[in-house]
Image (cartoon, rainbow, N blue to C red):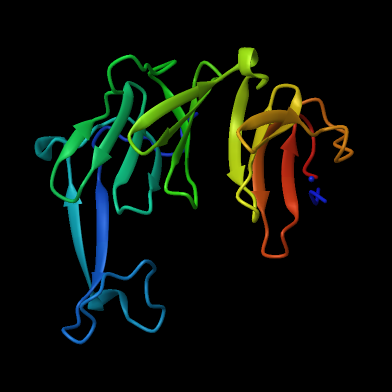
Length: 202
Protein backbone atom coordinates (compact mmCIF):
# COMPACT_ATOMS: atom_id res chain seq x y z
CA UNK A 1 0.00 0.00 0.00
CA UNK A 2 1.45 3.38 -1.05
CA UNK A 3 0.38 6.85 0.03
CA UNK A 4 1.49 9.72 -2.24
CA UNK A 5 2.87 12.47 0.07
CA UNK A 6 2.39 7.32 -3.48
CA UNK A 7 -8.55 -10.74 -20.50
CA UNK A 8 -11.25 -7.98 -20.57
CA UNK A 9 -13.19 -6.39 -17.79
CA UNK A 10 -16.43 -6.89 -19.53
CA UNK A 11 -16.73 -9.40 -22.34
CA UNK A 12 -19.90 -10.50 -24.05
CA UNK A 13 -21.20 -11.78 -27.35
CA UNK A 14 -24.05 -9.31 -26.99
CA UNK A 15 -23.72 -6.02 -25.16
CA UNK A 16 -26.24 -5.27 -22.48
CA UNK A 17 -26.13 -1.75 -21.08
CA UNK A 18 -28.26 -1.14 -18.03
CA UNK A 19 -29.86 2.09 -16.88
CA UNK A 20 -31.45 2.37 -13.47
CA UNK A 21 -33.53 5.36 -12.50
CA UNK A 22 -35.73 5.98 -9.49
CA UNK A 23 -39.48 5.69 -10.05
CA UNK A 24 -40.64 8.73 -8.14
CA UNK A 25 -42.47 11.83 -9.29
CA UNK A 26 -41.15 13.61 -6.22
CA UNK A 27 -37.52 13.37 -7.38
CA UNK A 28 -37.27 15.08 -10.80
CA UNK A 29 -33.47 15.33 -10.83
CA UNK A 30 -31.45 12.38 -12.12
CA UNK A 31 -29.56 10.65 -9.35
CA UNK A 32 -25.83 10.18 -9.71
CA UNK A 33 -25.91 7.10 -7.51
CA UNK A 34 -28.53 4.57 -6.55
CA UNK A 35 -30.57 5.18 -3.40
CA UNK A 36 -29.75 2.30 -1.08
CA UNK A 37 -33.08 2.76 0.70
CA UNK A 38 -35.00 1.68 -2.39
CA UNK A 39 -35.79 -1.89 -3.37
CA UNK A 40 -34.57 -3.05 -6.78
CA UNK A 41 -38.21 -3.20 -7.91
CA UNK A 42 -38.42 0.59 -7.50
CA UNK A 43 -35.95 1.18 -10.31
CA UNK A 44 -36.55 1.07 -14.04
CA UNK A 45 -34.33 -1.32 -15.99
CA UNK A 46 -33.60 -0.90 -19.69
CA UNK A 47 -31.25 -2.98 -21.81
CA UNK A 48 -29.67 -2.52 -25.22
CA UNK A 49 -28.25 -5.19 -27.50
CA UNK A 50 -26.53 -5.33 -30.86
CA UNK A 51 -29.94 -4.91 -32.50
CA UNK A 52 -30.08 -1.45 -30.91
CA UNK A 53 -26.62 -0.56 -32.15
CA UNK A 54 -24.75 -1.48 -28.96
CA UNK A 55 -21.22 -2.85 -29.43
CA UNK A 56 -20.65 -6.53 -28.72
CA UNK A 57 -17.03 -6.49 -27.62
CA UNK A 58 -17.03 -4.36 -24.47
CA UNK A 59 -13.85 -4.09 -22.40
CA UNK A 60 -14.49 -1.02 -20.21
CA UNK A 61 -17.15 1.50 -19.17
CA UNK A 62 -17.02 5.02 -17.74
CA UNK A 63 -19.46 7.91 -17.38
CA UNK A 64 -18.20 11.48 -17.69
CA UNK A 65 -19.64 14.46 -15.85
CA UNK A 66 -21.69 15.51 -18.88
CA UNK A 67 -23.70 12.30 -18.54
CA UNK A 68 -22.31 10.44 -21.54
CA UNK A 69 -21.55 6.75 -21.10
CA UNK A 70 -18.28 5.80 -22.77
CA UNK A 71 -17.75 2.23 -23.91
CA UNK A 72 -14.31 0.83 -24.62
CA UNK A 73 -14.27 -2.05 -27.08
CA UNK A 74 -11.74 -4.17 -28.93
CA UNK A 75 -12.36 -2.04 -32.01
CA UNK A 76 -12.53 1.47 -30.62
CA UNK A 77 -14.35 3.93 -28.39
CA UNK A 78 -18.13 4.34 -28.42
CA UNK A 79 -20.25 7.08 -26.80
CA UNK A 80 -23.84 6.52 -25.64
CA UNK A 81 -26.18 9.45 -24.98
CA UNK A 82 -29.10 7.39 -23.69
CA UNK A 83 -30.56 6.91 -27.16
CA UNK A 84 -27.79 6.32 -29.68
CA UNK A 85 -24.43 4.57 -29.76
CA UNK A 86 -21.88 6.63 -31.69
CA UNK A 87 -18.33 5.60 -32.51
CA UNK A 88 -15.96 8.32 -31.36
CA UNK A 89 -13.84 9.91 -34.04
CA UNK A 90 -11.21 12.51 -33.11
CA UNK A 91 -11.35 15.99 -34.64
CA UNK A 92 -9.43 16.73 -37.83
CA UNK A 93 -5.70 16.77 -37.23
CA UNK A 94 -5.94 14.58 -34.13
CA UNK A 95 -5.69 10.81 -33.91
CA UNK A 96 -6.05 7.87 -31.57
CA UNK A 97 -3.00 5.66 -30.95
CA UNK A 98 -4.91 2.38 -31.09
CA UNK A 99 -8.23 0.58 -31.40
CA UNK A 100 -8.26 -1.89 -28.51
CA UNK A 101 -9.39 -0.11 -25.34
CA UNK A 102 -8.07 -1.64 -22.10
CA UNK A 103 -9.35 0.81 -19.46
CA UNK A 104 -11.42 3.96 -19.13
CA UNK A 105 -11.28 6.53 -16.33
CA UNK A 106 -13.61 9.53 -16.05
CA UNK A 107 -11.87 12.41 -14.26
CA UNK A 108 -13.23 15.21 -12.10
CA UNK A 109 -12.48 17.85 -14.73
CA UNK A 110 -14.93 16.18 -17.12
CA UNK A 111 -12.26 14.44 -19.13
CA UNK A 112 -11.99 10.82 -20.17
CA UNK A 113 -8.72 8.89 -19.90
CA UNK A 114 -8.18 5.87 -22.14
CA UNK A 115 -5.59 3.12 -21.81
CA UNK A 116 -4.97 1.44 -25.15
CA UNK A 117 -3.84 -2.08 -25.84
CA UNK A 118 -0.63 -0.70 -27.34
CA UNK A 119 0.28 0.78 -23.95
CA UNK A 120 -0.36 4.41 -24.85
CA UNK A 121 -2.79 6.67 -22.97
CA UNK A 122 -5.17 9.30 -24.35
CA UNK A 123 -7.17 12.05 -22.73
CA UNK A 124 -10.40 13.32 -24.28
CA UNK A 125 -11.26 16.76 -22.88
CA UNK A 126 -13.62 19.32 -24.41
CA UNK A 127 -13.84 17.22 -27.55
CA UNK A 128 -10.11 17.14 -28.19
CA UNK A 129 -7.67 14.23 -27.89
CA UNK A 130 -4.18 14.33 -26.41
CA UNK A 131 -2.14 11.12 -26.35
CA UNK A 132 0.87 10.13 -24.29
CA UNK A 133 3.50 7.43 -24.62
CA UNK A 134 7.23 6.93 -24.08
CA UNK A 135 7.93 10.04 -26.13
CA UNK A 136 6.02 12.13 -23.56
CA UNK A 137 7.69 10.38 -20.64
CA UNK A 138 5.02 7.77 -20.01
CA UNK A 139 6.08 4.09 -20.20
CA UNK A 140 3.68 1.45 -21.53
CA UNK A 141 0.64 1.67 -19.26
CA UNK A 142 -1.88 -0.87 -18.01
CA UNK A 143 -3.81 1.02 -15.31
CA UNK A 144 -4.92 4.54 -14.38
CA UNK A 145 -6.52 6.09 -11.33
CA UNK A 146 -7.28 9.66 -10.28
CA UNK A 147 -5.94 10.94 -6.96
CA UNK A 148 -7.79 13.21 -4.58
CA UNK A 149 -5.84 16.25 -5.79
CA UNK A 150 -6.91 15.64 -9.39
CA UNK A 151 -3.60 14.23 -10.55
CA UNK A 152 -3.67 10.96 -12.49
CA UNK A 153 -1.54 7.98 -11.49
CA UNK A 154 -0.47 5.43 -14.11
CA UNK A 155 0.59 1.87 -13.45
CA UNK A 156 3.23 1.08 -16.04
CA UNK A 157 5.67 -1.62 -17.05
CA UNK A 158 8.35 0.42 -15.26
CA UNK A 159 6.45 1.27 -12.07
CA UNK A 160 4.40 4.37 -11.27
CA UNK A 161 4.02 7.68 -13.07
CA UNK A 162 1.98 10.76 -12.21
CA UNK A 163 0.31 13.32 -14.49
CA UNK A 164 0.22 16.71 -12.82
CA UNK A 165 0.26 20.23 -14.24
CA UNK A 166 0.27 18.79 -17.75
CA UNK A 167 3.42 16.68 -17.34
CA UNK A 168 4.09 12.98 -16.69
CA UNK A 169 6.78 12.16 -14.15
CA UNK A 170 8.14 8.92 -12.69
CA UNK A 171 7.25 8.80 -9.00
CA UNK A 172 8.29 5.23 -8.21
CA UNK A 173 11.48 6.13 -6.40
CA UNK A 174 9.99 9.13 -4.61
CA UNK A 175 7.14 6.96 -3.31
CA UNK A 176 9.43 4.02 -2.46
CA UNK A 177 7.65 1.70 -4.89
CA UNK A 178 9.46 -1.66 -4.63
CA UNK A 179 7.95 -3.41 -7.67
CA UNK A 180 9.13 -3.55 -11.27
CA UNK A 181 5.69 -2.91 -12.77
CA UNK A 182 2.17 -1.92 -11.67
CA UNK A 183 -0.83 -3.52 -13.35
CA UNK A 184 -3.75 -2.41 -11.11
CA UNK A 185 -4.29 0.69 -8.98
CA UNK A 186 -6.87 1.64 -6.37
CA UNK A 187 -7.28 4.53 -3.91
CA UNK A 188 -9.12 3.60 -0.72
CA UNK A 189 -11.28 5.95 1.37
CA UNK A 190 -8.29 6.98 3.46
CA UNK A 191 -6.45 8.15 0.34
CA UNK A 192 -3.92 5.30 0.37
CA UNK A 193 -2.92 3.88 -2.98
CA UNK A 194 -3.04 0.11 -3.41
CA UNK A 195 -0.97 -1.39 -6.20
CA UNK A 196 -0.89 -4.83 -7.80
CA UNK A 197 2.67 -5.53 -8.89
CA UNK A 198 4.13 -8.45 -10.81
CA UNK A 199 4.01 -10.66 -7.72
CA UNK A 200 2.26 -8.92 -4.78
CA UNK A 201 -0.28 -6.37 -3.59
CA UNK A 202 1.15 -3.25 -1.92
